[in-house]
Image (cartoon, rainbow, N blue to C red; front, side):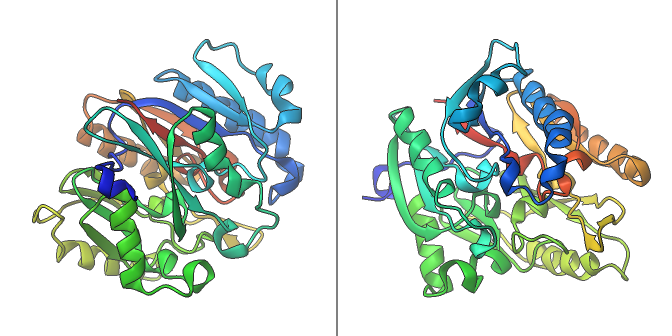
Length: 342
């Protein structure tokens, strides 16, 4: 049986959460392990405390580090779960939580291969999702598809948005056709329509995760990061995706309202572009955790905050320093995973 047959579906991220999961970083697997203390002190401690202002947080920690990590936090709604893992991107190796009309929670355990085999080993990461679901006694659906949570966004009403660059990449499911992949999304997320954008942002080593590019703001409404500089590679990328969205209707037949957010100024490190994205924000109960970048991005930081505040006047915008983690390849949304509340 698959989730659709049992009337489970993936709820939209803005619906109420039971808790948020954050996985603690593993120094040996970092791109820049010498920055470990800086990443912990400048990002992870702040992230957990920021989310804890809104909802409970469960920190997934390698068994030999549990006591050390506990020492960073005094918040009553932060707890710790000992699970061995290779890397900290729980959006991608964690479970996708589902709910049904009977008030039950389940989870999808996707196959995980470290973004197309880029970072070995990943055997422990492939077991994070089933370990979490088994720990909480949550019904588990094992999907026969290699996929990361950062590659999809749903509207909760039958539509998912993703990119061809990622889901159709031969380094994931090279034996499957687009139609077959779409079929699995429909079965395991219980959706009716897939909106296929083309490419993700320039420099994104995840092969175009949609959570850097675009997301549903509400049913029938899409936020997308755009670029106004024709000489920037992201200009062509975002213009192509904008045209797709303008011509698309969702599963309910609605023409999409599109809300653009201008990208931060380009930044590089050691000759490689950093994938700076305001769309890598995260919904929490009553708020939004928004990565901002400072420096030359101060103006676009403010515009992004103002845009989200206008779209969500009832949510508190909680900013966090997105530069402190970005060299590792992701940001707020990548390092979080929500468990739906029933």
